[in-house]
Amino acid sequence: MNKSPGKGPISISLGVIGGSGAYDLLTNGVLGENVGTITLETPFGKSAPIHHFRAGNLEYLFLSRHGEKDYSITAPFVNYRANIYALKECGVERIISWSGPGIINMSFKPGEYVLPSDIIDETKNRKTTFFKNRGLGFIRQDRPFCPQIQQVVHDSMHSLGFSHHEQAVYVCTEGPRLETPAEIKKFRLHGGDLVGMTLVPELFLARELEICYASICYLTNFAEGTAAREFKTGELFEGMQTNQEKIQVEESVSRFPSILAGTFLSLSRTERTCHCKNAMDRYKKKGVINDDWHTWLGPA
Image (cartoon, rainbow, N blue to C red):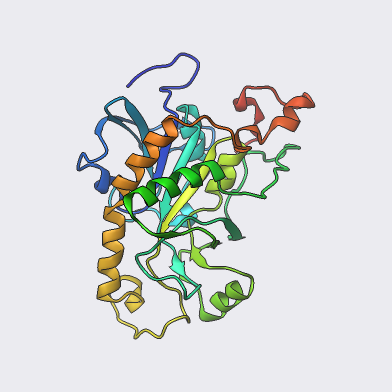
């Protein structure tokens, strides 16, 4: 892999974080050749494997948050801090994640895409900041997802003819259990549209290190209590997903390489003008921190 002095093992500005089975989707060569893989030791533990892909003059990094095969690490036990630290160390400035939440808002349907615009944190036990025991981290969250990446993803999906929703609130729960009907009712009353387990603290950690972050969600099933479904033992979600919905979801996932290809190309030509890259500016101006992000961090 390419070396860049002073910038970690490599320097690639685009990163992708995918859900279960995501790596298998990219190994078919649609989005370039895997030219190397590294796993970084960080102050917060070992990162997931980071794969370096190259497609022509375009390069990007890919990390599968739940493991390389199937779903080997559930959401509450992902080492989010190590993963985000490692991507930053590799030069990543923009992250696109994808995940498959459930549906609270019944105007949405399984297999559809959503670019979430806001988030509610319902997690309980996760390590959610790099700034433990430091006087840092008062970062505004008016737009928790990078609006610049969201616009580029919107344009890419529009050009491909893939419809999607853009105004949606993602509720992130602790897991690994699924939510109760009463919890889903509470989330709906609080304005939640989607429910999943993966985006917190991922997006908040990215912002702390001034990395742009946006997510593409493919909707997998109706959340508990929203649609009557017979309990089926031994099946995914125990019957919360019909066979037709399963097919629709699989088709949505299969389109991700096309969506990412257009998004990557546009992002590589787009200067970062969002506020994400300046999240820590007030601390720099006060002289509390310098430009070396490694010195910002608190203990593990």
